[in-house]
Length: 72
Image (cartoon, rainbow, N blue to C red):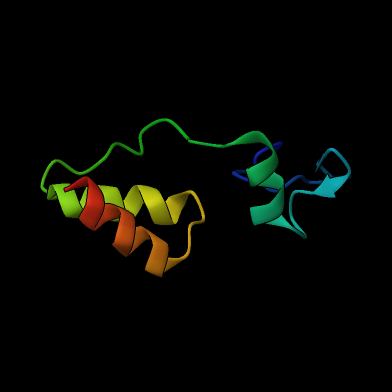
């Protein structure tokens, strides 16, 4: 419930005052949630992995594309 995977039957769940169900993305950013079982697909290319990780961290797409090019 604390990370928004299960909805509470009653009450609420907050992280540093942020309601997990009203501001899910903001709450998860506060604690850095990475659920078990979300393994990186092995079929991704290097470019796809860097793009995925950059976007996951909230970088703008243009920055992700530029940094990916630099790193490759």
